[in-house]
Each structure stands twice: as C-alpha cells, then as structure tokens.
Image (cartoon, rainbow, N blue to C red; front, side, top):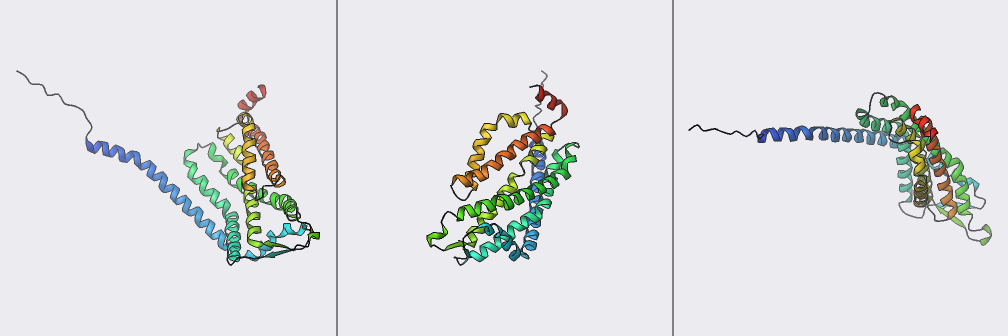
Length: 268
C-alpha cells in the first residue's frame, strides 16, 4: 500500500525572524534619523545661546523698553539669590533659540522631506524663510504693540499718590516678557502653517471655517493660560490678535488652495 507524505508549507523560524527584522529596520532607521536631526537642532540652539550670551546686557536693557511708558517711578530690582543667574540664562537660551530657528526648521524639514512628493518638496525654502519671518514678526508685534500697552496698564493699577514705592523683580519681569514674545512668535506661525498644510492637501479653508466656534473656545483657553494675570484686559490683549490670525489663516488657506477646490468652495 502506497504511503503518501503530506508536506506542510509552514514558514521556518528563520524566515519569520528575517521578516520581523526587515519590518523593524525602517522604524529603526526613522528613529535614528530623528535622533540625528534632534541632535543637530540642539547643537544649533547651543551655538545660538553662546552667541546671545555675548550680548546679554544689551538684550536685558532692550527688554526693559516697555517700562518707558510707565508714568510713575519704578525700580527694577533683584530680590532672590538666583535672580541674576535666572535672567541671564533665560535671555541667553531664548535669544539662542531665535538665532538658531532657521537652522532648526531646516532640520525639521529634512526629517519630513522623504515622506513628501516632489511637488511638495518645492515648499522647503518658503517654509523655512516664512516660518522664521513669521516668528520674528510675532515677536516685533508683541514688543512694540502689545507690551507697551500691557506693562504700563498693569503697573498703573496702584496709583502713584498711594505713597507706595513700586519695585519690579527683574526675574519675574523678564519671564513675563519672554513668555509674551515666544507666545506671539509661535502664534504668528498660524498663517504660514495654514498655507503649508493647504498646499499638501491636509486642510482647506472650508474645514477651518466649520470649526471656527470651537477655535474661539480654544483661543480663549489658550489666552488665559499664556497671560500672566487673570484680568480681562490682558486676556483680550492676547485673544483678539490670535483670533485675527485665525481668520487670516482661513483667507490664506482659501488663496493657497488648488484652483479646482477654490472654485468648488466658491460655488458652495
């Protein structure tokens, strides 16, 4: 009687292990690439920090410019043992961040570039330059428009006729000023981000318009977190510009949309 041997085509353990390793390889490559880009960005930041440290005294004097609008006499003092060190480090780190920002954005772009199409890669230079300029414009807007109105208003709550001498802690003041500057610098990236995401077809103007009511709530919550004081004046001083930037982002998204999508949105 003939015997038939049934062979099963089960993959061997070596084949399974090789498949697992081949699947893990791309992930490990991405993690290694991410690590490399982060290290380069951190190196640029540290170099920028060293450069900013050389101009620390000039930057600290410049950051006191919003105090020029204060009508009563205010003394800027240090009240803690580490206040001086805190101010110097904060100014140097954030100054270095501003200096190194274009190079750090370049590292971000190099990390995401392989996942983009050749058409999308054309926006590398506009992304880097636009993001850097937007951050700078946000800082300038805050420094010359927002802070000269906010600082005298907050200090002026206590009248000069009260007989109380106003002493402003330099560490607290610099922290508040830098918080405002960085917040407005990041928020001014909204139109640029809207342009870029529209160009790569991740968002559109109709989508941004549909979530406007939720965006207003998020803007109010974000403004309450960023502002150093709970008064309504500072809250609106932060919230109104953010909302205007959101509306500008909708217009830029509509302008940056492909023609076919733009015509369909106009028909709606």
